[in-house]
Image (tube, rainbow, N blue to C red):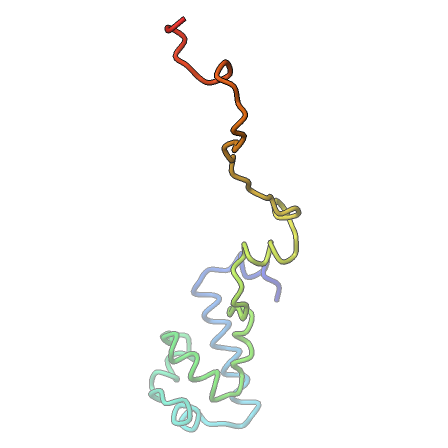
Length: 127
């Protein structure tokens, strides 16, 4: 199922399909609700309600059920395994405004001691 198809479903419909998918996975592996609930550390009644569409799992319980079914890899798309910030990533790839790193320079006063008095700054009302 593509993300476009998911976008057209309600939250409850998505939850129902998720429950059906996990139930089918459990049945294919010939695992009882009691056994899965015990392995995941959730209540069997909670699992029954979830699979029947009458209830929902907390996120922690969902992760526990996925772990018990060895399906946590399905969460990988939600997790960003990059420790690099988006800006640092742009800098590394040289994209956008980071194609050429600008060099900032400070204006430095002239150390030229040979400046004559006629070029010295004045208010202008002394003349």
